[in-house]
Image (cartoon, rainbow, N blue to C red):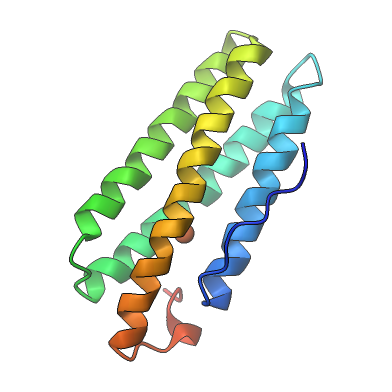
Amino acid sequence: MASIDPVDTGVESIDVEHRRIAALFTLLHDALEVPDFRTARDLHATLTERLDEHFRREEDVLVRYGYPDAKGVGFEHRAAMGILAEFGTALDRKRPGECRVILNEVLYRFLNCVYADLSCMQYLMKLGVDPANLMRA
Ligand SMILES: [Fe+2]
C-alpha cells in the first residue's frame, strides 16, 4: 500500500501523531499479505492503543476549551474504534479480504477525523491557545 499523507492541521504535535498513525495503517495493510497474521495482530494492537490514546487526548482538549461539537467528535472517534475492533475479529477469522475492507473503512474514518481536526484547531487558535502546549497532558 502506498504511504498515506494526512492533511496538516497546522499543529505540529498533532500532525506528527497523524503521520505516525497513518504509517501504522500502511504497515498493517501490508502485513495482511503474511498468512499467519502474527505481525498483523501485533500491529492491530499497537494501532488500537495509539489511535485510542490520540483520540482521547484530542477529546480532552476539545472538552477543556469548550469546543461546541466535542460530543460529535467523540462519537466519530468511538465509531472508528468500534470498526477497528471489528477488524480484530476479522483477523481472528483469518479472512484477509474482509480484513482489507474493514481496514479501509477505519482508514477512511480516521482521515475524516483528521479533516474534522482542521476546524477544531481553527477554533482553538481563535481562542489564542498555544499550539505547542495543545497535546501535552
Ligand atoms: Fe486527530
